[in-house]
Image (cartoon, one colour):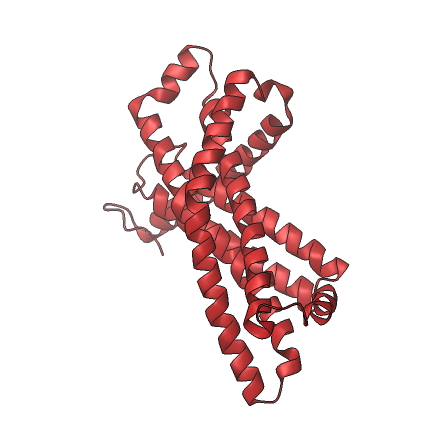
Length: 266
């Protein structure tokens, strides 16, 4: 949707919207490349930098682990029960568990984990960066020879990626355990057939697609919202960096999901 700017004709609004769109994606690509270089650079891991990184990783991961684990367990329990009961009613009980694992572990739970991290960690981190920039913190760092990207952006992006991958892995384990308990209860009788079915679902190709999907989704939710807080909206533009960052993040997540579905089922 085109932003209504007073005093501009439709072609001018279209041009400004396209320019803002191209500029925003260019900034994301540029900062993503810079962050990748900094992650691979030994100079980014000084003692103070390691302490800052560890603090951000802890603050972005530890406080949400318990709440998200409970949420994932309840979600898995409800969805597993619905799928199993529906499959039994249609005489498809042999496919129920495989369907649960494909729906929960491969698709729904990892996406829920990344969105949870975005809402609780990376979007607030983008707001913090915007406030730091507006308060003059970035200019003060540059005046003393510091780099705002290295000192402020990098720890938040790395913490967001770590939190997203950690929650995705934890939620997948919770989903597998809850699916087993929902069907077989607290006994080991169904463990051999369950492990065989799990191995059938997670073929090497599916495992590769799942790993890449989790990695790129984590990068998207960690980088895009924080990038929006590093820059001004621009001259003559409406200050909608947060909403614009959200829209771009959801667009990338949707694209990743579509590509993963194509890779898994076509």
